[in-house]
Length: 512
Image 1: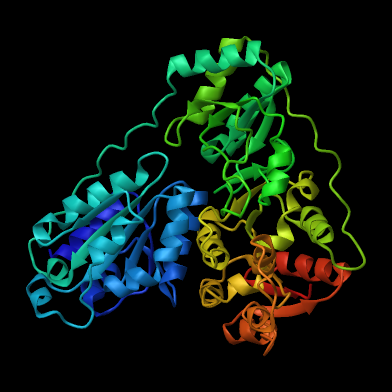
Image 2: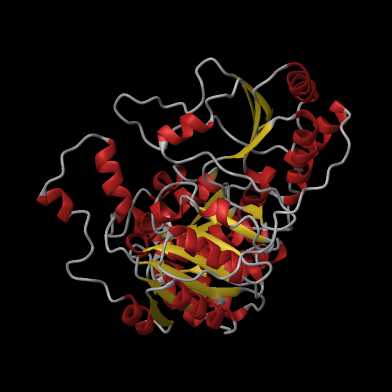
């Protein structure tokens, strides 16, 4: 058995049965092993950010890691933006990167790079395996690291001779540590604050946004009157009927300051203190009052649902049913608007849909309009590296096992990872992409104003995508994805409904 064969067998034994790949010469023995050994679903991405973003989306829905297959340092570099977003989302990924043969590295061939150094910035665990005898054991450790709460990126770098040399040994799965429980003293302290103080807010993030944790948070809020709010960007929020109608910290600094102005005690539940996405002249970085006290109930890696249940028990509060969000909205009609798009999604989405949101400026008000939708998952970009939406939709669709994925996708961001449409077509994934076509970097126009810069022709040209226009219908068709334009809410609704009844992907260019 060579090292590559021990790697594939170890991955499969550890429950890693999906590999998102963009291989090169250094990985050919890994590719050959994937061909010889059954059980791994191999998904090709035409650019490495498709690969890393898909692995991110897969973890968010499956709750277990996929592996990647990247080619040497430059291939890793191409995928770093996706890995950055995945790290911020706390997604577990077994990130496998090929490299030059150990004996070849001293010759400084063109693809030689500081692969391990580049990986460390996005990885919780990094190792280069130089002997085929160690590949299986190192792969088992990488799986363990990736699955450790709340989810981590584990990068395993494999020089090509460690793959092709004989001596590979399959390693058995290693135990995954259970998510730590909250400190009992923290539970008692937060209970005391809720009993004795006013202006208390529980800020929920990470796994605190899953349905079970939401029920415990609602139990607490119904009895104490505290406010509940979600972080501004969240890897996965369970929303719709039967879930809490949670709002989130606004992106715009002035709106966030107003939303948090009355907070006197901020309790963090798998969340961090709310800060601005950027620093702006004359505006604070912290989005909550300077005199507010901050209390930690759970860190990211701790069990949020168990902590909230313990807090509710400490308070002695009864169970409380989450109230109905009201009737599902009717499909809207008329001119396009952000509110109309959100209502159309809420009115038409199938039960159990997955929404991948990279709508950027157009979608900031989508949450209030979609609380009465059927139960669904909503995935957001936690790291801010644009182009996350199309690849994450790929991984979420593969993990979803037939669940409809609805991508709310800004056009400028989509151009970073447009190759992912080809993967959606190749894999016949149930993805409906609503492409928000305003033909400009709208968010940057707002940021330009926010920093007080004066508009000018050169600056505005750098934020414009309309010279020439991008033909999204033709672009999608060229990659095997059916597509059509919509200019009204009626046309949008018709196209969405049609796409939901088809097995493969569909793109709607929404002319906003």
